[in-house]
Amino acid sequence: MSDTVASLLARRATTDPEGTFLVHSRGLMTFGEVDAQAEALAASLAGLGIEAGDRVAVVMPPWTEFVVSMFALAKIGAVMVPLNPHLTRPELQYMLRHSEAVAAITAETLGDVDFLQLFEELLTHLPEMQYLVTVGEEDLWYDDRVFQFEDLVSAGAGRDFAGPDLEPASDVFAILYTSGTTGKPKGVSLTHANLLSVAEATAEAVGLTGDDLVIGLTALHHVFGLGPGLLGCLHAGAGLILQEGFDARETLDLVERHLATVHYGVPTLFVTELHEQERLPRNLASLRRGLVAGAPVSDDLVREVESTLVPELLTAYSMTEASATVSMTVPDDPPEKRRQTVGRPLPGTEVRILDQDGTVLPAESVGEIAVRGPGVMQGYYRQPRETANWIDGEGFLLTGDLGLLDEDGYLHLVGRRKEVIIRAGFNVYPREVEDRIRSHPAVIEAAVVGVPDDVLGEAICACIVPVEGAIVSESEIRDWCLVTLADYKVPDRVRILDELPLTGTGKVRRVELARLVNECEPDGHDAS
Image 1: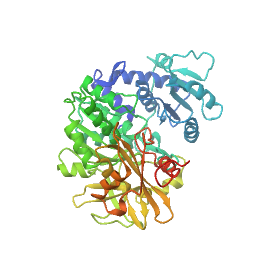
Image 2: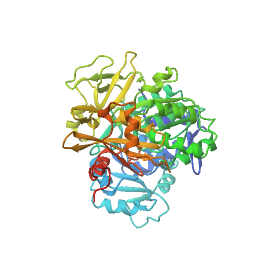
Image 3: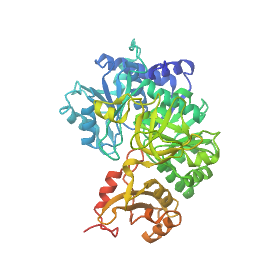
Image 4: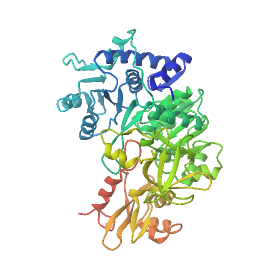
């Protein structure tokens, strides 16, 4: 891998300067326009003293300014720290301090949050933080450490800028913080080669071309949106529709309006789109292929999506520490493999299944998934012990996920090791129970967690979100599960919720959900 993120953009801007790269609420941006703005911003940021290796936070929705900032930092050789703009103040402060960010590029306001005020207050608590760049219209003459994004782009236009020579395999491009669904977030250091190798392999497996327009990526701070999404489109010369949030109605409207051809997304997005399309059908004939990743999917969901939204849905197994895609199905796979597995490892990527002692298990055996390949992270930033705990002496990343490789080399996901519920001595994998509950016609989403129980050790609690207007009872859910599940896997308790607590990328916050469940009496009603 000889390319860096900056050199890949520069080459695309040279060969296809007028090609559409970004479709957004205000219009379009070409590859040439993104490269020119990034070059100008890079010149201004370098003029402020930001240099290769410096960490710079980017905190805003998937706006064009996010993309320009990313490429500007890549040109400098600085390390981007993309952060979810919906984080709380303590979460932001922790990540900014932990990453030792010297600057932040942020939205001025977002909804009712005044980021300008928030960051100016944080500056006094973050000794490493030197500059703040805001996207907005506020007059910032009163502070010589705060700059407007547009002013820096204008000031840098036409200035000579020569970035450093970088080594793609060793120079870090981004530090991405894990979503923290079961614990404190860790900073994942990913090099240029890490992200580009996986982005390019994923784009090629999907069959992405310069004629495609991709939709469904609502979180560019997330590894899949950043890598296979944004950088994958750059590799293929495809366009990307930018969306500010997780909204099924808007996504389907944009597909119809812009004739999107490829739909990426997490399972939650596709589930809500199915109900939205049933409520108000759109013309989705332009879509030719989809790719779902970020959480396990059921055979039934794949079938429903293929019959209602896209004619062909590919599935992928991805994680931040592996630069997103580890394995995925491809169009030539047999239908049953596309619907029941997460495919075979990407080219150059190896997958092993290990027992608790680290012994490699044979095909069809359930164990921990271990991964080695060009996408495996450099390590956890400032956490060498954690890195050593999760990457073994042979370079295999221990994922904490449970799965099996079948005789044909396809990977099947079983669940998270930490999420396994031990009920009366039996191992229960939440995903199996969740898949069954989600197949109920009155259920739109479900998550299963273990709760302490004096008799069973752990009891199974199913938290479900019904379809709008539907009425479903605990006994109905239990009877539904008994049809296909052994009795020890059937939920002991059922909670009916308006919504599940989710991360910004659509994953269930299981620690928060378990805490919520533990505040309830065994009959499923709130404790009083």
